[in-house]
Image (cartoon, rainbow, N blue to C red; front, side):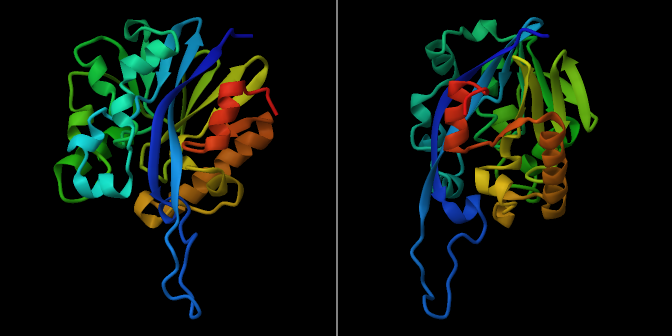
Length: 268
């Protein structure tokens, strides 16, 4: 059995209309043609995975200047990461007892601006940055054309980085840690399946932003989905993995899942 431990990094909070997170949560009716908007707050987190082969960082959070004009104004207005300036990656690592120089590898679930904003810390280093081929291509396409998704900022990832490209639907680069391709939210979304203390943890990333996306199979708004059909197919494959491995699945921005990660995957 591999000796693997996981440490949660608190990276702040994003405030947004819950209709983005779970599509159609608040809808007008003939009796109420102008329902009140509901705003929700979602945690942003990263993980430090201590593995015998490497100390691995899962995602890098938002750029600390997100609210100071670094993010496009219209995007920041929709997804306000109001405390990003309090959560520089190096500082949050230090709070958890790590130095930036201790990170041996980074696994990017995807390259949206609330996940790739700390990659600049690894520019010019030999630290491998694992990313799916489809994600890297789509991120550059989106950030440099008028097509694709507005949720990519070129300056997040257009650095001298040691990219390690994931090509397949499933790949293992560290014993006991499987990278799983889950297209839907983006073309190259990666989840990870990890065996910890004899139990299986699946970090689903933004395949499911919150539990309702996963448990109730209610998708995010179409604005947050590259492909609805791919999203649903990935969800079913993820649930099959959950059943086969009796796994604990954690979502990308769910407060309850963050609490469970903080307590340990064996907690009920």
